[in-house]
Image (cartoon, rainbow, N blue to C red; front, side, top):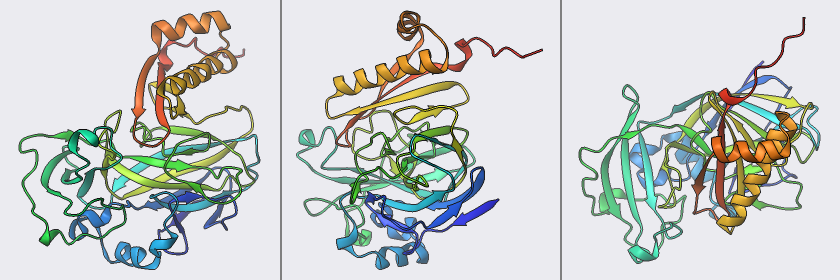
Length: 343
């Protein structure tokens, strides 16, 4: 069955996950959902990144209810028969930009913020869906101290300049933030990633990919947000090219395996993630999870898996700007032995 989940005041929670939230939608395992994911940076250039429905959404969610994080989350989606200990399989089929523009903020939480004297700068990009590339359109320095995501700017009063003439950026539409509700009382910020998913910011979580999230509460209570049209590993300025997306996904309950952290499957790779305030600890956590995947899911011995990780796995920094820093390790699916067919 196909469900449609629009983003409005009844279906959005701004800045958090919460296991006590009433479901915005109930689905059965295997159902398809078309969901609207709205960027919290739409106000950076409202004439380009907002329509009347998004303007109304911004009006309907009070500023004092946008906490403790910053992302606009659509959901939660209750999945029948999803229980703690299960895995929620989310197959992403489409991620279509809602507008032909996106915004990048060099933010006060960016990795090089001190090197730029904590100046905040907005760069607006135009999107070409034919070439699947983005180009810098214009940029402006935020005239005050900090630009809080969710603020609606009067760009006409900003000192705008052309940006990045001649440069072209490949589009990588994906969800920066998505996940299940943690089994924690009260609101959990949408900013740091964790075992529930959250703000992973891995640009490979796009169309054609499948994410597996460990379920912590009945129904899983899955939500999506923080849509991006492109991002590099690291996300060093603090944000990607932030732009609203219409997402088509299939949600299923998996009871045949378990994994402690979000696991990503792409057409070419398996990818594990590690998170911690300390990048070394995040790397160790991801390494142990890759070891676990190779031994428990692929049948390698522990010693063989360790060798394989060194010769075939690629380590990369996912992001360094979300409180808990992220590491991901990808290993090619092509290296695994073919499955034997029973005769």
